[in-house]
Image (cartoon, rainbow, N blue to C red; front, side, top):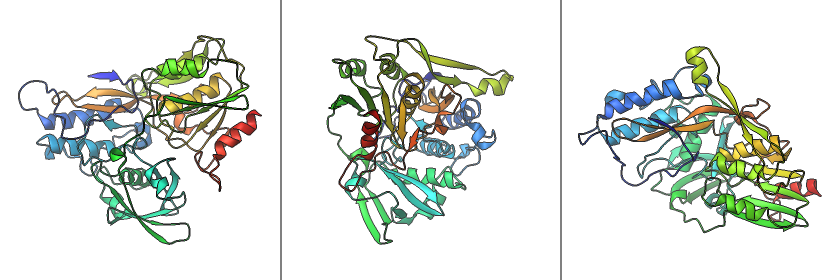
Length: 412
């Protein structure tokens, strides 16, 4: 069964295995669900071109349907199959306490391979890693007592052979199993060893925050979205944030939107910034072209609503913890509001995900099924901001928010 997921990074069940509703009161055929998952990836995954059209889960480490006999082995199989896609937007709707956390929603370290080293290229603002002093440029030597090279080699779903694939695996490992603290050994900027224990983000209590923080800076209104792009009540919060005197400029801060959201709320914001209908993104279903030779593409539009703020200059801030709908909104504001975008590379979450239910267990698998594009045809994951920063959340020597200050300078 297939359905469009309303939230691009929905709440993932944790705790004991979710054995959900099976097709009947009988014991589910777990192996049949394993085979069905591989067939779903064959037919529905929109980004198979990254692997020359093949399904990388077939033959990957830990992906053997014959090893699946119960719920625990099916979950391990499914996690390994999803890891093989090397795609942080392909996720499961079921987990165990030992399952690795989701990136970027429950990760505070962005790790990439550079010149053979595992380098922290960004640290999430306000996170345990930042509080512990981890800085961009630090290298990770080990995680959970194992060298990162060995851990990447041993992570199921491999082999992870390219630098991009190794970076994906390193981020999975950096998020850590959900039920335990994370043990790291870093090399800092001076090459000194730093051994740190960081709490898992699933164990960190998130303080209550408004859906949008609104501040005024000399007539420029700053709207910082607090990972709220799928929250009920956001439309009212948007309208409240845009009420009152017409601002001289708007800064839309999307640097803390890792969990994605719903296009409804993106269109609600953009609809206040236009005075005529405008296209904001392109969609495609590559599977249809693959199966029939006939392409299917369509354009999603934004319609005006409420009191229009069209013509107000807009600057968008984005970064590594701008995910999915946050990325789509960044591109959409570029298209419909002629916004200036200031961003580090974003999370790069691929496409729009659909929910698929495994027929025996009822477990949900979330796969990128549509490819998404800027209206100019640029794939969303390949978009580059007008002003590219190494890290949009990086602070100056006295704690200055450099990206925000750059945005204010532009609007002044």
